[in-house]
Length: 463
Ligand SMILES: *Cc1c(COP(=O)(O)O)cnc(C)c1O
Image (cartoon, rainbow, N blue to C red):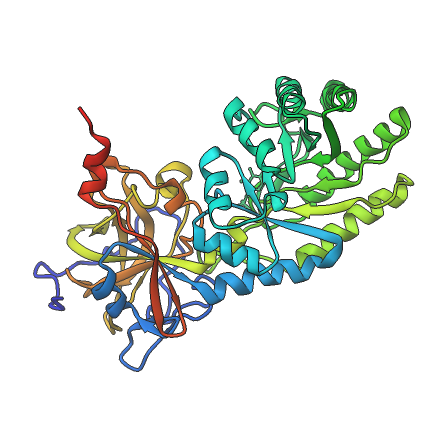
């Protein structure tokens, strides 16, 4: 790896251009523990180490780009959620955030359950030995084959998402001679993101059955009439990257209101309530996520209080964190390829991946941090934009970030908090090969999802 300074010498703008950034940090060499996986530090040479292995060695052994996942951190976060909710609640890891067989085994060992939302995710879960009764099956348009497979395998619950699905699942269960445990997913008109929530959101979305206009109550009425369904509860999922608990408070109030109406109309108290996932993580130093035990305490108190007020037995609670478990545990390791200083604007730093391994910036305007990890640098901070190698100008990984001004081709940089919704949303755009996921633990690294090869690509091309 070359460590020479960029020949043109990146320049600084006197006035920084517009963007989502705060002032340059005092010290670019400090790795904020909030955004990096638990075991990340810099060693005496200033190289990032994770799980006891240096970033430079990981790049040599596994190539770049690569997702590097801290197994101890993953297990610790899974365990923290499990412990926080205790035995009166269930934690379902949302597999869509990132799923692989190793992850399934870790979850199983740590006592968590698993959400899947496609036949592929179900197959992955089952092939790694997750007991079917600990799997919940989600989705707004599950195919008949997926439903049949889920019921045949004996999944613990299917989350029903529409009137048609109530009948479809009931019919297939009946054909198979089974009684399927189901929850009904409702939309309560609450939409939550980061620091805000809207309590009067339009139920204008594809998921769930609106509480408004009595639709959710009607869905429960119909499901209760079908012998092949066992209605165990109501499901609500209100958003993503949420820091503020008040959205959950309003949602729980409305879900419990429905449970009360069901009791009054049908004389039954549904035993479970699922409050979904969506708990936020730190992508940058500005984010302040809550700890699982605080979240568990807040959610349990809200549900208990609402049920006491409605004179209902407190149902068993389940939650479905995805991002909050896997997100912080991984970073993407890239090698810098070209550097383009644009006078008065910023310096474009191109890496060997991009929107194919992290679509979130292009898709959601997501914010990320970045650090030089193959060495330390005393150079001044330089406003940079980390971009990929794709034929698309929106191919941005980190929109606004400071990197040392002596950043050079061959340097390794890493983007933290890419464990969730990066590999799982990865694409082959431009026939770029999807990076591996490398788990590190106790000084050893192990590929848990291998790098795609040209052979893999060409195998699908059968023309
Ligand atoms: C996406 C999703 C989750 C997980 O969301 P995170 O933001 O990753 O916690 C949980 N439940 C449902 C129903 C979802 O669709």
